[in-house]
Structures are given as C-alpha cells and as structure tokens.
Image (cartoon, rainbow, N blue to C red; front, side, top):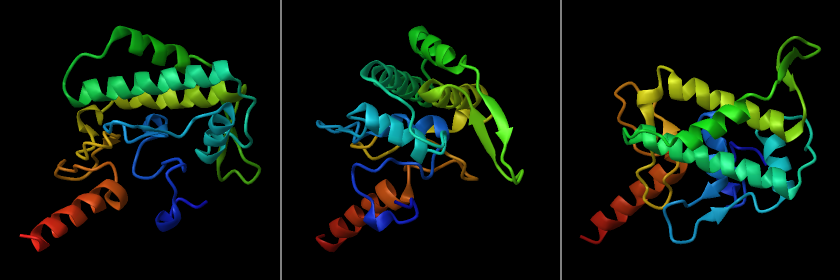
Length: 192
C-alpha cells in the first residue's frame, strides 16, 4: 500500500507520514489515549513487515516473540521519553538506558549500485531498531528537541516534531487527526 493513498489506509497499516523515524515505532500502537489502544504489531511477522515498510530493511528479518517483546519495550521507552521532553519533565533513566543499548548495535551504510541511495547492512531486526534508536538520540539531543509535541487529539497522543515556522502545530498529521478536528468543529458549528 502506498502511504500517499490515505483514503484507502486501514487501521492495521503502519504510519510513516509526517513524523521522524524514531516516532514511527511508537505509532505502531494506535489510539494511545483511548480506552482501547490499537496494536499494529500483534505478531513477529508484523514487526518484520514494519522493518520492510519503514525502509529500514530490504526483506523481513527473522523475528521471534522475544525480539517482538524487545521492540515493543523500546517503542514504549521512546514514547515515554518523547512525552517527557514534550511536557518538560525528566525522562526515566531506565528508558534512556534502553534507547542507548538499542542504539549500540553496529550498522554499516552501503551505497546502492547506482550510488543514489543507501542501504544499511547489519544483522536483522536489531539493526533496524538500532537505526530507530540512533534517530531518537539525534532528535532528543538536537536542535529540534524543543519542538517535540504530543498530538492534541486526546485519543491519539502520537508524538511528532513541529517543524512549522511559528511552532504552533497541534496535530500529528493534518490528514488524520487535524482533519478529524476540523470536521468536528464544522459539525459543532452546523448544529449551533
């Protein structure tokens, strides 16, 4: 499925638009703020599919329940650190340690045959998660740290980086949460 084809996207589809790589992993749990969050990584095969669809690996790696559990644990650490930064609180040291361990896996960049793109060579899902963790290290310690936000949609609570000039972006994506908010305001005005 092509990410540009928003109208045909299902709830099971992974979210890669309008966000940094390190926030695509936390987005595998949808509707975080609702009473029934939606798990997109229900099986090891789902994690393998995420690795390919995210562009981190060319083919799905071997994933077992233990690797899935580690990925979900990293996902939740990234979410908690992002929320802490967005709300100007100190992140938990155990979450920071987990990101640092994940980032420590060696991955090697290799130019493609046409020298137009890069592929990363390393061992399986650990390498993919290492790239995610390294992106988090870069974001959390970099110049966009103060632009980390939590989506204003109370059901969503997805993390994003506000790269708008005034720094007033409220939604993780205008094609999903922002559009839903606009529609709700329009309906409210129409019924007033």
